[in-house]
Length: 569
Ligand SMILES: Nc1nc2c(c(=O)[nH]1)N[C@H]1C(S)=C(S)[C@@H](COP(=O)(O)O)O[C@H]1N2
Ligand SMILES: [Mo]
Figure (cartoon, helix red, strand yellow):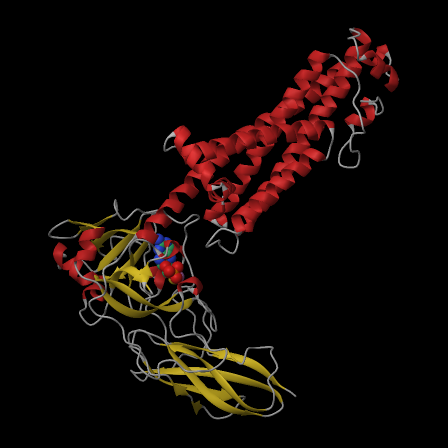
């Protein structure tokens, strides 16, 4: 190693100053201590990498944790003979041994990255970047990787590199100044040449020594803060991810009994128009609205439904007992009260479940009760009129399945409520835990003190899906099409108006039932120019959709959906 760079420039070095080809000769003890702290910096940076990745995984892709993905990758790629050797040598703990070796390799590599970043920047950061790239490759190539699976590795690598550079800079600064400081006073062997090279005088030494200790303190503060936050955030996020990942595995393994009664989609229920929303919404496309920051993890094995309050008998049900009551399919269109005119906060699924009225009947509600406060494991509550849940003509259900699978985690696994005709916030409690039979006078649901009505039937409404606003349409025949819904009453007809023309009757698809939306289409001979297209629906009670605009609060938007269409060659 040839002497070249002075400690002065070194202390200010960062990305622009790669550290030079060599190091100053210095005291062996100092050297070893600094190297050890550099190695510790590498470990802390690796910890920050993993913690940031886990935290990012909580919000993006819980299965894309680098720890898991790289572990799974190593288990997959290790050749069979090595695995057999591992089994022979270590018994059945082959996976533990593989992962243990991987962990050891990560520790050693992190320590090396720390030392490299101090002595040969930016090679430590580069090493961390390579680790990020390997972790990225392992996560995105996993079977069933989520679309955002790349995020945790990238976030982790960025945070890791930032922490590594921060620590290396601090460490370098403290070494440089201490050396300058101590050289004048103690004249430690090996540092004298360096200090001479910097031209530091003995007079400046005490101050420099203080500055050095300040920088050292800076290093320890940053190191301690980074290590502590990596530990707390990383462990917390890992536990959260592990819980939901294991619930995901439990969900995947769950076999629900076949429905006794299935839903038959009648002929003519689905119109063939490009750009039109499908009749049944795939689970992956189904809108999601809830107050949960992280998706609650509920194991069906320990799930209990409690029915209490104003009841003759308190009822407690296990998941198996609920399922054993017999499952039927119900097609219901769910709608959020926050759906604006023309919005897409609604969707239709074939739910698999048990009527709520059968469960309430076991509890024998008191005659003076008028509401059921359904409570989620996360504390969310909804107030549903008791009458809507006991009415034999309305299929309010506790759902365990959605479109042929167990409920997805974010749609309420393992059990949620679905009540045809009522907005989600007053009926569709996910991760259901309790049904409290009560009164509107005695109890309030989550959204009631927040500006929304205690009761909220879904308002008759309709939407234009195609043509889309802002997209030009060629002159001639064009299909205007969309959706209309009047849950629990049913859509009687849909009318479309071009500019200020007459209301024209659209063709309406055959409904599955009164609780589901319908599709509609009108063939239009489009003349060049710009046109307003407006839609409105009429329900089977003869009510016409309200044209006057109202905001979503307190009980749902009103107004006709209108689209400006440009017709041009
Ligand atoms: N536990 C819980 N359940 C909830 C909510 C919630 O915030 N927490 N939101 C409700 C609202 S406002 C709606 S519109 C529906 C949406 O259900 P989805 O996310 O399955 O589409 O869930 C309802 N159930
Ligand atoms: Mo909602």
